[in-house]
Image (cartoon, rainbow, N blue to C red; front, side):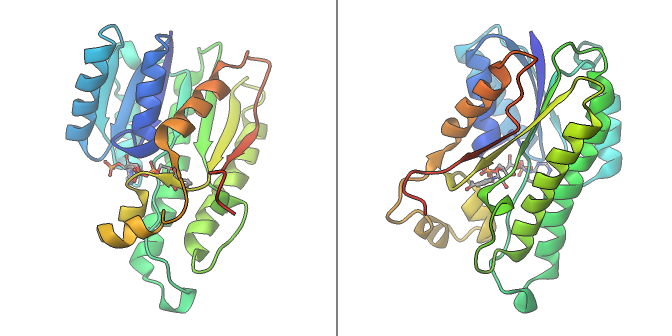
Length: 245
Ligand code: NDP
């Protein structure tokens, strides 16, 4: 059994990862996000299908450095060795040219997508010390490979994730920790609603004329990346809806 920590497990890709990995019966799940109730609900749903799947949920805002340190250093005894970290928590907010951008949105994106990933990695790596098959998967984005109109700060954060994946792969080589990134194109989750601050109608227009990926599509690819033998690392996978240019 490998123990997997998933950040941002309360919806979308993170939630789908929990469900898909539980179905494989070879993972124990540590699930965190800010909405603890959603995590507890997910735990119930998963365990109603897979009663033997061990799950521990905790509330965590990855932007809060002290909270990340405290929570990871004080996990229950049975959960203090981690084999897999899926750095998934992230968001996009606003879609404006730089001179009209909301600086609060910028802070939320940089603090979550970049600093949150760094904090979680920093305090998880020591918990991987005794793992014989440790792996970190960062969720990047097509926005970490290209830029698009008004995507400025979000794209910058995902370019940073791309750089951090490469840097962490080098830094953690000696410890035998594999580092990969999975970079999705458009996935239908709560992402678009968060981007447009709860405007569901505007959020839906994003998918007009195109079949987006589902969280499960990405989760199944993550499960494949994790399933490779320890001497094989998939460095980086860009996964797009077929119809997305
Ligand atoms: P969702 O909005 O459905 O999920 C985002 C998750 O991140 C939620 O579980 C949310 O939980 C969590 N989260 C957000 N902020 C924080 C925080 N400060 N601390 C802890 N958890 C946080 O979107 P997706 O599932 O689509 O997004 C997952 C990842 O995929 C993100 O990194 C995103 O950038 C990336 N991505 C998404 C794409 C898409 O089209 N959907 C495309 C490319 C990449 P809670 O609110 O409970 O804290």
